[in-house]
Length: 148
Image 1 (tube, rainbow, N blue to C red):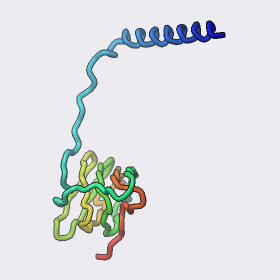
Image 2 (image 1 turned 90 degrees about the vertical axis):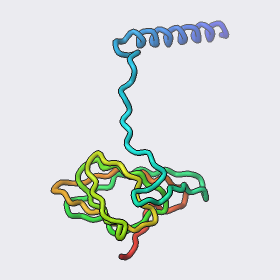
Image 3 (image 1 turned 180 degrees about the vertical axis):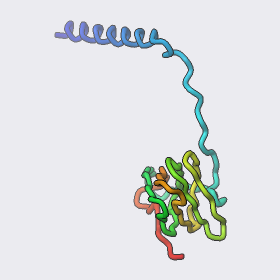
Image 4 (image 1 turned 90 degrees about the horizontal axis):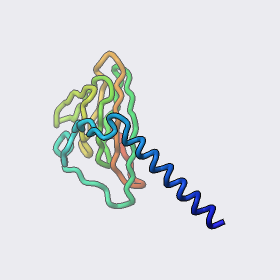
């Protein structure tokens, strides 16, 4: 029985080596990868808040796609945690109150305001879709509505 296990182990290793050698001979397999496109690198939000990650509980990252129809608004809100945003589609205007108004278009990346209340509105003729990645912790709210 031990001999059969050794034979199987050697046969499996040989098969894997063969696959790896075959893959290595595939045209382009050894070429360098495509260049990376940087999206954003900052320690501050769009309104200048310093990013601080929660440490009160185990880390929890939540990613969602936020859809907005033409003319639709997010409603005034804040975030309890840092948020990376990436506009997948459309044109979005975000009002940050006394911190100004910013317009984001497909392909734009941002570190969203955390404590500064803000409201997003689809100002285009088509849908808006935003990838929002919340870098939070267990038990913390990602978004909190505020009255304006």
